[in-house]
Image (cartoon, rainbow, N blue to C red):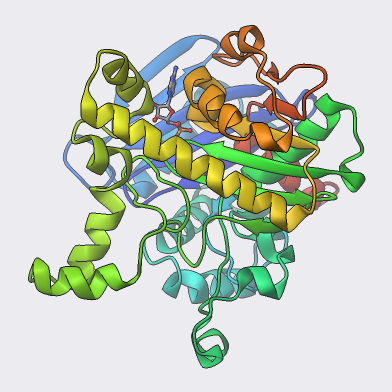
Length: 396
Ligand code: AMP
């Protein structure tokens, strides 16, 4: 009998889901409910090349979950679901790995909400709604931060008073851990080296972006910190800035912390620099047509990325593999070429034809045979969540 894992990624106004076949690891169904809690809430299901789009009569998270349940019921799929896996953004220091959800786990995730006030409450809502709609099914939480819990103290501490770490949890946590863990294992396999004896830099480049230093399969450093704002230039996020900017802008713009935080999260990055778009593909096209904002935005993006990758090599002591993943990493030969050329001093030599061919789901090696290995890997966070969920629930 075919069995499935339902994977849920619940945001404050959206709910992304996937049904993964536990035997073949293939994705049977994907979908997205959007504008939850707003006018025009809707849900889309994609299965076997077919797309079904529905308006949600009950336009909240519970309404979305009920719509998923009735879609599955109509196709006799509900009975095949053996477990539910949830993406959770912040596990703080409480969670070093994925875990079965019970009341104490829910309470600990709630406790981490102070560190991720936009994300954890939405993730919790997803878990509670799923528990109500699928009573009796085991549920698993998979944390974005868990993979980075192996970082040593010298990598995760900020140089601020230690009391802030002890009393308020102020430290670097890192994010995108589920993706970094998945692609690092894939990269080791593709490069033909044992993960247990490898030094990998993973560059997850999407609207949010981070790099991670992965030594022998464990994260030893990453570019994101207490929040997903630190590190690389992103679609609308600034990445690293001088923290003195807060005081300076508070008086220059006569605004408060919330205003500056919003500016750094939503109006900065590629969008802020280019004054055109947060979308890398659009910027590449505009840069090719000579748009000065797009040209400088892409150059700052690539320069800062190369600088962060080199910093990760300090954490590793050597580099066996650099991998690119995420929407930009998997699809932008321009960014990959620019970055590899800047990193020639680490032994990278770009195979331009292979780089141009690695596009739209085509993974592969993009460096010459005598070069340090650079790979494009397709990430699959949903599959990683499903695999963790299956491992923790088998026989339950
Ligand atoms: P993600 O958040 O992983 O879905 O990635 C979204 C980012 O990937 C956006 O900036 C897109 O512009 C970028 N992207 C997707 N396809 C391409 C492409 N063909 N060339 C450059 N960037 C792309």
